[in-house]
Image 1 (spheres, rainbow, N blue to C red):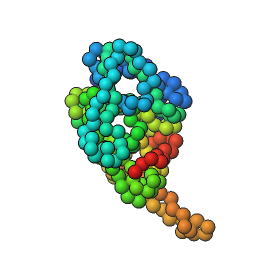
Image 2 (cartoon, rainbow, N blue to C red):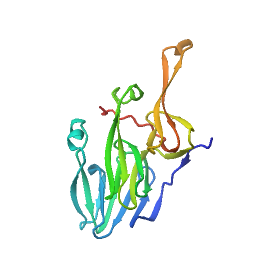
Image 3 (cartoon, rainbow, N blue to C red):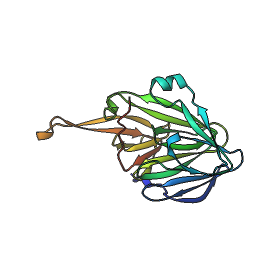
Image 4 (cartoon, rainbow, N blue to C red):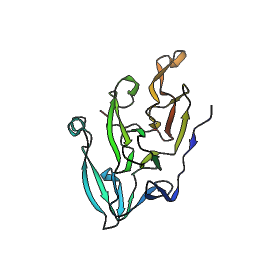
Length: 231
């Protein structure tokens, strides 16, 4: 079994789908996007670092707004339109990277770790319930779903620590600490794996992991993340 590989931590003049961006910094890296006239992106409002004054900022409503409001999630996201440069950074040590997506591609992301995306990517969510997520307040958590609906697009993510990727073959499996996974392809199945330490002083102790079964990609962040506000 090949071990997960480290994703690139830097990019200069990276270009895809007509968008140019840069990834810079070490402990708390930043993403800078160069927007041309009429180019749009959307992002979580609290991660804006700086922008050129000519970039216009607006609000983009989310699909399923009522359902999101009941779940305590944001019902609007922030949208930026060029021309100009705009930069983002999350308030935490980690790893920023871009996922290049073709039309029809979909990626499932741990909640609240999305940074930004091009305007042609659809953003929805799904709640995951059950004992498998007992470390997330015991009641589950949300997975953000991003699907490229028209042409090529880019999804930018932030992982805590460094981000590694494992490409699973059909039927291949990997167990990941519940706070350690960041993203997965929709073709990858995720379930709970509970191992009981049934001898000696560890008789009442369980080791809980999320088991991922391929085919597809799994992103692993080296700094475990347990969201205390999950409902």
